[in-house]
Image (cartoon, rainbow, N blue to C red):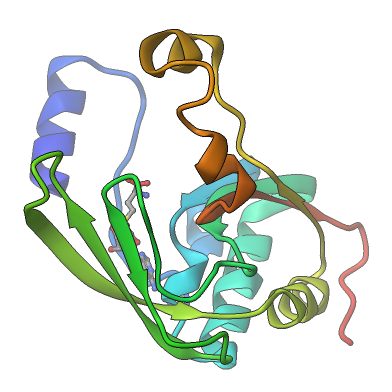
Length: 179
Ligand SMILES: C[S@@+](CC[C@H](N)C(=O)[O-])C[C@H]1O[C@@H](n2cnc3c(N)ncnc32)[C@H](O)[C@@H]1O
């Protein structure tokens, strides 16, 4: 994957550098300081609170003062065994650190991918955000005008009423809080 991305950059220079590493273990300060970091479908792969806290500390160290992290994350209010729109999230109940099986299906109903994430409740996330020096906002997804035109005005109503994912915005506060 990285080779393909680097080859693309060689063909069409956009100034993008690619690195691979575990966000919970890599010293990200080596890459510089940024206004914005993104991580879509990332934090819910933390298998322990410690791993979640390490990820957030490292992300924080990558940001300038008042920088932001924006990502998409599993909704902490996710309904157990959620299934819709060719996705299935398998976990029996909302239990901290519970293994959460994710399955993806084609429009013909054939499963083409499965992987494991971990369930963390809102309190656990928000305590970890605060500890790492962030204030957080959970932002509901919205359907674009283009999406409504393609799928119909109400196609995503069931999703929006019970979304599997939310947008997460973390703002770095000026002084890092330790508790
Ligand atoms: C479901 S994929 C999402 C990929 C992409 N962000 C997107 O939105 O299409 C989850 C990604 O998180 C990465 N990931 C999971 N745990 C990670 C960790 N500790 N450090 C860095 N990446 C991690 C996986 O390698 C995988 O690429």
